[in-house]
Image 1 (cartoon, one colour):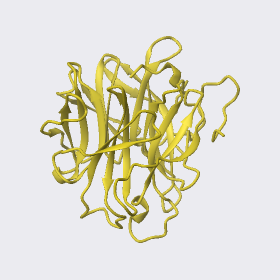
Image 2 (cartoon, helix red, strand yellow):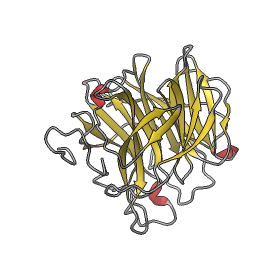
Image 3 (spheres, rainbow, N blue to C red):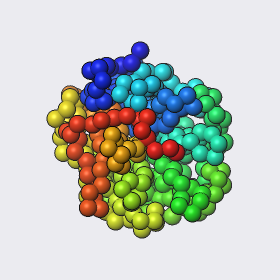
Length: 317
């Protein structure tokens, strides 16, 4: 059932790694290990073939899910995630963040009522859902944050206990804001973290003795480094130049990172990002993977370099 195959014994994934077989436009991937040790990729299921007005094709979206039982080399489409929408009718689900914590799974889901045909003028919230098995989800409501124009949650444990959520606040110049929680249920007051230039899709991870945040500036992914998850230093862009692999020629967008170890026992980050296909009107997208390493205190990513992908060597959550 896997979408692509790789040469026997090889850990080099195909390019692209995955594309949605129904609507051909997977975006905003997030990965998590399932209870049985396989992996799930959740993503926004845009509809490349929608012929409605304006940007309706990016609204009214479901959350798609794919599965891999070979450490992420090949992925099978598992359908859309049921039971995420607490309201009747067709609404918009975007950018799922799924983590394993506090004895279960937590999804932080960007949510818009209805199916707008324009970007502006529509409240956006981040909803919190929980699950024991990644199949059945329970909606806990919207997280109280800094405005009613918030999307793109990312959650990471704090070194002293508790959690921090970073997110895009469109009402505050499309900057990254953050709020803390001791238990993923109650949240403190949010404040700004990364302001300029405008961006979206923050993702935070630990690699090579540093914390890293990547954000999508629509011209590549900006890299920020921190020793404590509070003070951030910008380092420039990755995935900003065209790659040579099949369909990996556009800028890298809204990514997720899984941290593990390579075959030599060294830290490696596998970055899963999406790109737009070059043919007009540019709606079709694909998910790719590249390797991240830290050298001399800087985050390095060569999208054309070989990747030995094995999520079975991922760091335990």
